Amino acid sequence: SQTIHQWPATLVQPVGSPLSLECTVEGTSNPNLYWYRQAAGRGLQLLFYSVGIGQISSEVPQNLSASRPQDRQFILSSKKLLLSDSGFYLCAWRGQGPQPQHFGDGTRLSIL
Amino acid sequence: LAKTTQPISMDSYEGQEVNITCSHNNIATNDYITWYQQFPSQGPRFIIQGYKTKVTNEVASLFIPADRKSSTLSLPRVSLSDTAVYYCLVVGLSQGGSEKLVFGKGTKLTVNP
Image 1 (cartoon, chains in turn cyan, brown):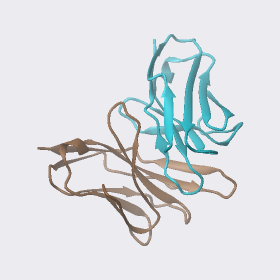
Image 2 (image 1 turned 135 degrees about the vertical axis):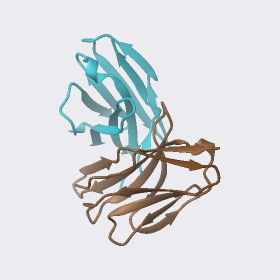
Image 3 (image 1 turned 45 degrees about the horizontal axis):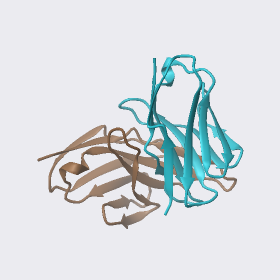
Image 4 (image 1 turned 120 degrees about the vertical axis):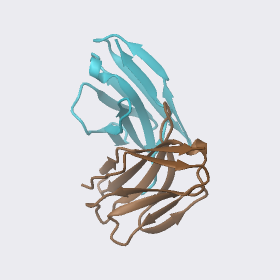
């Protein structure tokens, strides 16, 4: 069966520090991959999605970037974190065609 | 691009049927609709997906009228553990691989004893 892993579960970072969040999927190949951010008590905001290795689509201009170095690996990065980057970051994957997305357990990012 | 609208909150009691409606007036021909359940500090969990008419699985039903401008998630006989936020998502796929995803803002369902 397919599984998705996100780490770390929680992270506390100072303003101006770099960020790297990793997401990996097992049990499938060539998945579509997604990064979302969810502010406290709010809905989900799509940040990036990828349909293949090296292919990244950005939905919202921001301080973050994404990369897909391998088929089942999706990385969310920042060179310098801002206070406004705090939130709950979720990775998701979807198989080809009209399939539902499946989400990881998320990373709670706090910026101090 | 379809914009989705859901009620902000709903209250119910154990054992009742709950229906949550999502409006998506501008849904495109090839868009499909997915519903998720989210508990605090967890990722959304897939509930059900459909394109038109009615879809049923072991936990819910999804009703989509002929014009597809709305969809209704039906949860039969809710329990306290169904207290969560429910999101509808309209997904549009293109042949080129690009996609459009429009999440609703979520409906907070509270099930009371």
